[in-house]
Amino acid sequence: MSEVSGYCLKCKKYGPIKDGSLIKMSNGRTRMSGTCSMPGCGGKISKIVS
Ligand SMILES: [Zn+2]
Image (cartoon, rainbow, N blue to C red; front, side, top):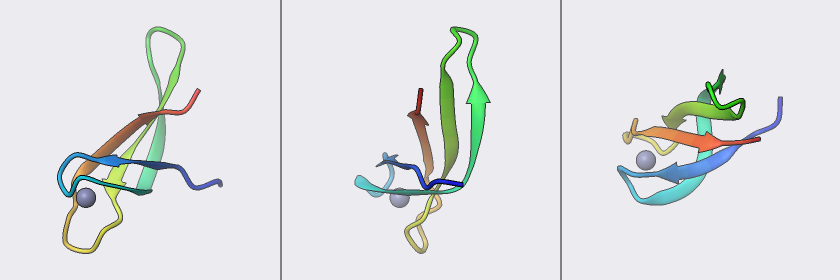
């Protein structure tokens, strides 16, 4: 499984998504949703991957 990075709105840093899961959206695109990998952050990260 390839690592996907996204922008965390909580710590305002760009980093890898932890525990990411792919979510198919109604418009046919795929979104990677997970949490920030920064220790102690736990902010949600969501990124469109295709
Ligand atoms: Zn964060």
